[in-house]
Length: 316
Image (cartoon, helix red, strand yellow):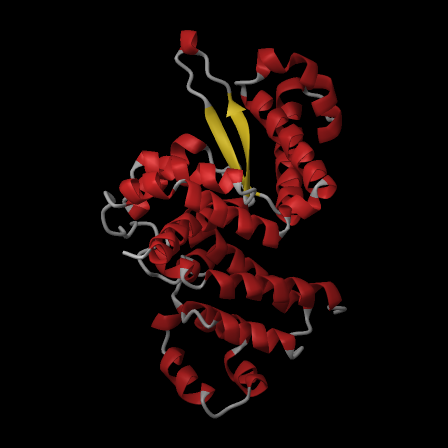
């Protein structure tokens, strides 16, 4: 097989790992930074990769500067505690968002433990000198995450040229070439893609997570699609309502269509945009579990960016 085809296949598989890391990073809970021991198992189960293959692909992503890696839990052989690493997309917006998310969790956890309410940066300054004593406690791990995310943020601001998209892509190709032999061997042993039980091709969990009844099961569904071919968006909204309009189009994976509609300014009420934001948040949280949704990754991200722009300029 020509080397260019082999490299293309390797890059496609690395991209799967990368997009799953991004999907985790989009979350707003304690799982927003994937932990290595759980993530490796997830990738093995979802794609049929061996643990060794996933580890090599993560090394490539790290060395090409597409992701940043932090230590979450230190190894302690005497206590049989294994090392745990965390993976973060090397993107300044993502890192800043994660820092805010985990700063909030740190403030809550610290207040619960100590009864003292402090800002995250104050907690970090106070506890960092004691890091070696608390590093494997819940507060200690949160302190470490916030401190590392602050360091990552400074790094990306300071060395932005080395973390540009062009630099990352060129570096990725170089890393693939240098590890082609081992990856060709490891990926040659993988099985076929496996469907996870989480996704079940249900539109990303939207229908049941946001509403008790699925939009596609309602009697209005068929009439909506018949009308959509001949009526304007405004007319459809007046007949079926905003909630139904969003839900059905998201269910049908019409992310590009919704982005185009948003760009026209039809939705100028903040409450409508917040409704779409909450629905899209459900879909993004299910990306990591749903192989079918991952095929629409770029369209989902484009819709998310257009939605953020619309909310920024919305005045109602």
